[in-house]
Amino acid sequence: MTGFDLSGLLAFWAKRHDDILSLIGEHLLVVAIALLLATIVGVGVGLLVWNRPVGRSLAVTSAAVVLTIPSLALLAAMIPLFGLGWTPTLIGLTLYSLLPIIRNTVVGLREVSPAIMESAKGMGMSPPTVLLRIQLPMAWPVIVTGVRVAAQLTIGIAAIGAYVGGPGLGQMIFQGLSSLGSKNALNFALTGTLGVIVLALIVDGLFTIITKYTTSKGLRA
Picture 1 (cartoon, helix red, strand yellow):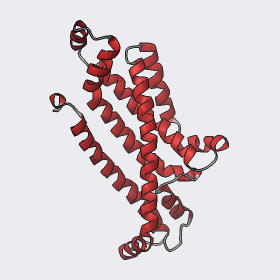
Picture 2 (cartoon, helix red, strand yellow; picture 1 turned 90 degrees about the vertical axis):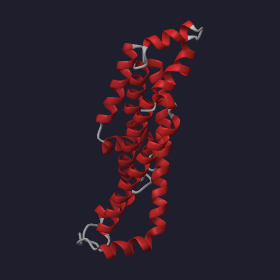
Picture 3 (cartoon, one colour; picture 1 turned 60 degrees about the vertical axis):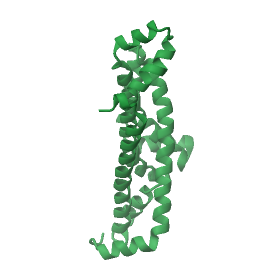
Picture 4 (cartoon, helix red, strand yellow; picture 1 turned 120 degrees about the vertical axis):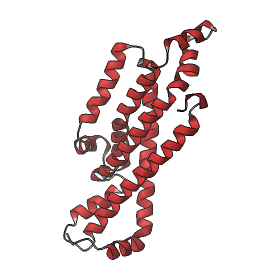
């Protein structure tokens, strides 16, 4: 691989900016879809098992086991079932996102004071109403933190999705690694890597704003 050349990297970006922007868009899209699916499933599971010890333990442990599977191995294992491209990437990213979302949903709901829930029940609210109107809003900052962690995790793992023909900046990283010694090998790898880092920082900042404006004023620190 040739040495680093800043002017060469800038020229590379200028020449390929359309391709780079397209890959950034693909990366964000696949992460957003996977995160949305994982949030729906993770929060739903958390709502179902937060007060059931066996179900809670099973859900968290299952999600934790998935997270221990190397991403390359999981993605490769899905090729015979789903082929190459978006589908295995989306499934893999969704699975990897579940643990922090389920765990934080459970933790957030369990941290709501029993006295508050008893007061709500004393006002005539049914248990499902207490869960949705009292517990869920109070647990929301903790849940969003779980989604935020999942987003950071997913942005990084999405790059590995290129191994199975998935979308995103991982394509540039793999192209650089597969063409070691060529003129632009380092430029491809650096562009993909820097793009992932910048996206992670931007998304993290967006979640800070989301947390601020979706959390009740009474719960803000």
